[in-house]
Amino acid sequence: MFSAIALGARSVPDIADHTGMDPRTVVKALQRLESGGVVRTDGPEWELCRDVIAAEARRTSKSFEPYDEEGLAPQQASVLRAFLRDGRLASIPSVRSKRLVVLDHIAKVFEVGVRYKERDVDALLRAFHDDYAALRRYLVDEGFMSREHAEYWRTGGSVRV
Image (cartoon, rainbow, N blue to C red; front, side):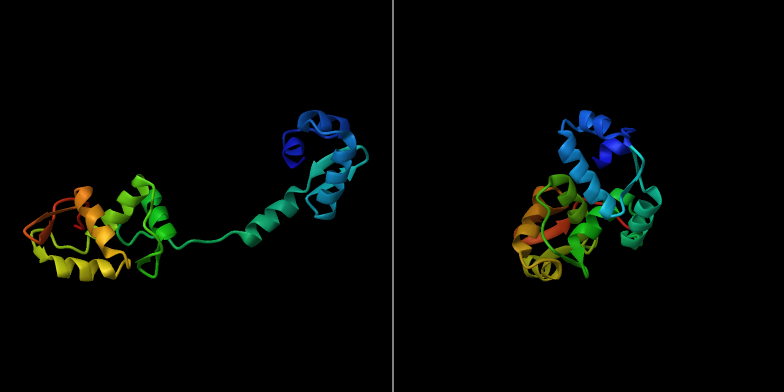
């Protein structure tokens, strides 16, 4: 109903035609929308209460602090906001593109040119997530770190300048 009105349908028969619903169902739905303050009628014509909708959107909108202390692109910042809580991972992203953003962020705790023992890598990764072994494996598999003889070093990811 809402979409049909937003797209220009004004009368009950017109709305019914756009939605594929019978007119009685349309009238019941319009009455519910009207009681919620979303639509109003002026005779046989229905219209959206755009001012009410806009006010409610403003009232309920969430403002996000930009995650740009690292100069991140908005998309990367959005991924980090979605997965990081107080600096820790709420979960490891299953979507590879999102996981790469998170791994790049995590890789920045490792200094370029420094070799780390496995227990030191684990300690640093444990600060991000309890499954530090999975993070370590992802970092190596995705080329952010390399390993040899139980030593790890950073080989990829972005670098703070």
